Length: 230
View 1: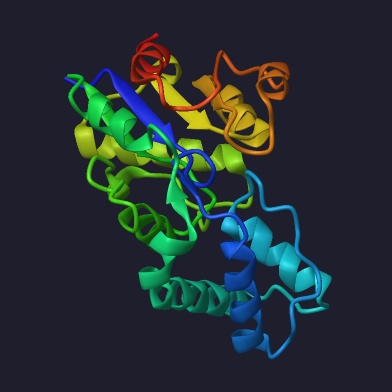
View 2 (view 1 turned 135 degrees about the vertical axis):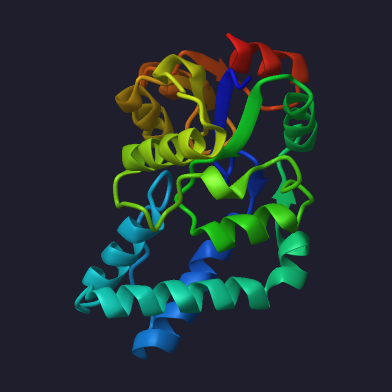
């Protein structure tokens, strides 16, 4: 029996890869369009579809379907080429490995992602730090699904329901993330919003956004378990 669907954000919730994403976009834009990156949008809590559209628009490039698809393919290739250096340039968030492992031992808990990243990019990021083992990548909500963060939660819940043959009522879905956009997405779905103040938003900002629970970080495994299990 499944009782909880835990959907983790990736960047600045489970891993810290600050600055690397901008470099990836610089290389991707140059390869696909021959254009140098001059404008970097705010990426926090946004989906890859939204970010790509903003990058292209800021450089006067039409966000045609074929161009967006080419950007996604190239971005995935660029990340794959950087795998060996990713673990050296970034890090796992303190307590992330322990939290994922502890939740994996709780009967009825299913763990996946709701992240602005493409699925392949999300896998590579977590794999670089050994955080992929307890995450079901088949049922997540990812950045190519929609430009709107809340749509990713609906996508993840739909996939989880189909795979497990069980309905996940909104109150049994827990979204863990570091930005007000993560919180807003959870609230839009009616899910439990757990804010983690490991990104650019402090605890008060996450509370003001409506998070049901706010953690300073993931180092207190017991607090993480309590937040997820209600």
